[in-house]
Length: 125
Image (cartoon, rainbow, N blue to C red):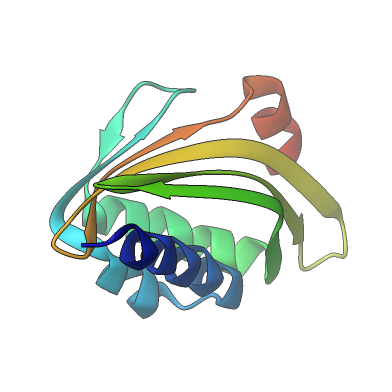
């Protein structure tokens, strides 16, 4: 892949989450993708992560990635952003994060997501 292709994959991935398009997110993942979050140290597989994503989509019907700072490189990309979301009851939340992805054959093979646990607690409250 070229750096431009990795960049395009990152944009497709985050745009799909914003739209609530779980199928498009799944298409960005390798079958054996590993997804890790710093706040719990656990690694999720593709199906488990898509289940969590579906819950996020239901609970926060409006989502957008603000302040995107995306850097692509051979074999992956890094994005810093602030996830801004509105719940069904109108409450707004934000969650600053940094996502580091490894890419192979046009799909994300590993995703490491970093966010402050205090911000995460406020986001899900």
